[in-house]
Length: 211
Image (cartoon, rainbow, N blue to C red; front, side, top):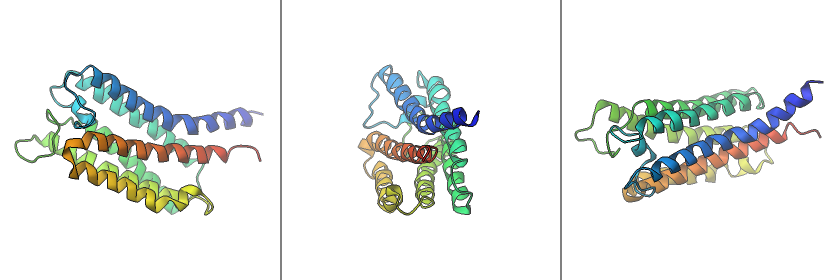
């Protein structure tokens, strides 16, 4: 008799965990940005709030960025129990876990003040931060693409897998190509990625519903 409550818990957790993760990031960054004079959501990376010397660096990195990824890793662990045990599934989940791990690493290695991408005069920690963050997003997009391919063929997510990945890489390229709006494009890319996480959670949750 305990299977039904557990099934109901898994149903809601699959939907709630990616939503909580995304909201934790958005609300945390929003609050700390409002408390940081001169911060711009359009031109500044989110990491600027956690950069060396920033007034709320510790709060940003350890109360916002790292918990965001812990919520997401919990989602991946639960999602893993709902997906077919295939090599492609395992590879995609590893890539998505690496995305979260790299962003946690980037939080633990805060960038220099301003968090710009230039090479001159930056610390080794800053360089490691930028490499980790820049690697994380492509891994997420590739991981999502591969994971969606494991879904049944009638799935809308599967039919849109290639154009969805193309949009994601377009946003990633825009971060590099339009530095004056890099913060905006980073947020759009995060929102795009999280929309897919939530869609995958809903898809997996619906498989728990009684037929």
